Image (cartoon, rainbow, N blue to C red; front, side, top):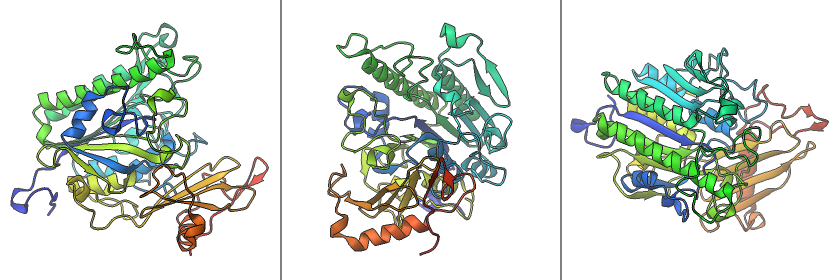
Length: 456
């Protein structure tokens, strides 16, 4: 019998609705509850004040596609099907991949998604509605999601046509995504089955340069129009303001439907902040690096969980958790069965503000599969190892950081801890399952990329 662990067996709560809200390229330091001084995020901050805020939560990867793939499959970056943003068109999920939505569907949940999918175009087997989602609205294609005024949005197996939108700037996509999210919550609350909403928002991702010369597209710079800031800073702040306002609308809708006490809400970001964000905002706070980096600034993300009566209010957790953990956690809460080969752990104890009984042995990431340089990173206890110069058939040195005492990764202590470096080296060589989707170990653009060995 399923026991969620938040109450006694005699008073075990019903299976919760699950709302997973994920921003796109929102930095660790972009929220007030994580130290942001200039941009106000009252609705997201309220979720943190009424729930739990994680300080050592990690995305599935340093860029969009692999992070989403890790979330959906429960497999870490060295195992999941989509491990990089490029190539975009061969890394789709296949019919034999098991997704989080499929696990929840099999457990009796209604599953809906809005926003950026990135794991299969329309007509492909990887599309969201072929991977467990009853409904999907927004962007299936990775590149298409770079446009905030698109000519169309994917609408299940069809399209919502927005002819001329890219020129007239009539319909801002984020607004439409939120309306569909609210509609899904309203429709689902009237049913007797629980639901899973995956709101994969595109804010505050930089837009296509074809849409806006500075890479930021927003209908208005309110409420920051009167600030003595450069226009780019006003736009970025306004995008986060819009995101925060719509998180508030989602919470209000859950309240209006009378289901807040039985709804788990998680808010996070798909990877670290962008290096072109105005410096005044200090987008990644104390972390070094940005999106596309395997330093903490590229992969450590804000993560807030809220569930009244089940998650204690005003809690902070330093437990090390990652996107692959959502698969076993949500499966346990739903009374479902995750795939046998997932890489996650249940974090229900951490949600309660307790220590994890069986924490991760390690976390693994890599990046640059289709480039001439291949990067790897491992988090093991307080240690972080980064191999950032793997090229021309040679595995470069490992940099080692003690995150407990050096969150900014300023001091490489590899020479002081050779035994830890050796352990991390073995993990880097064994944690990767070779994939035909990526040219690691092959000659690519004239360069031979190092192939990690399997086994010890």
